[in-house]
Image 1 (cartoon, helix red, strand yellow):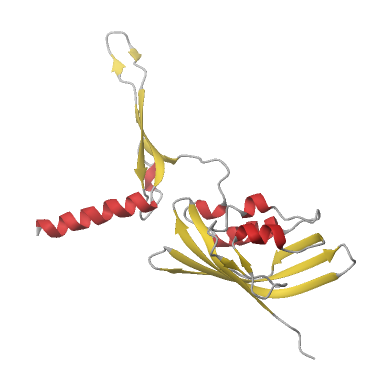
Image 2 (spheres, one colour; image 1 turned 30 degrees about the vertical axis):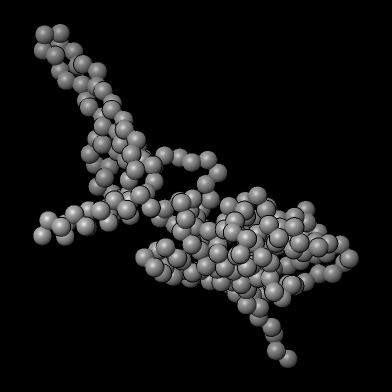
Length: 216
């Protein structure tokens, strides 16, 4: 029986190592009353940084004097803050693609797409074969673009797979383009994205839109 529990303990440590975040454990001790001086001694605070996960949060964690605080990280995107609000992720994604200067916020978007060169990214506009990696997309997409507006037009559906290692999101959105040659385009589509959980959060490893055409 002990081998069974040893195996489960090892598995728990592996999961913590893969999905943890740095947390600060703070133990605040109140000062005690000194009857000889009639005063209260100052309290003490002990802090320790550790790897941790929070399971089945109920709110009671703040009833005791020991508080758990997630260590802040600079430039975190919504897909790196747990639990993840996938609607907020989608809205941040659309906002980053929108621009009246002809160039989306590629620096922000680089934090969302996987950096792998074999990740194929499809768009509503050519090329039909998509882009091989975010670097190619960034340098070649939308030649002559002056303005782009991307707006989510419906609810976000998110489905977890492989115990949360993979998440598939899907939602309708509208894209509006203005090009330097005077062309203007408005496209309604549904975007599907596959997110893979990595050490720095979820990254897009596949993306494709399904364009909706009006009949008649």
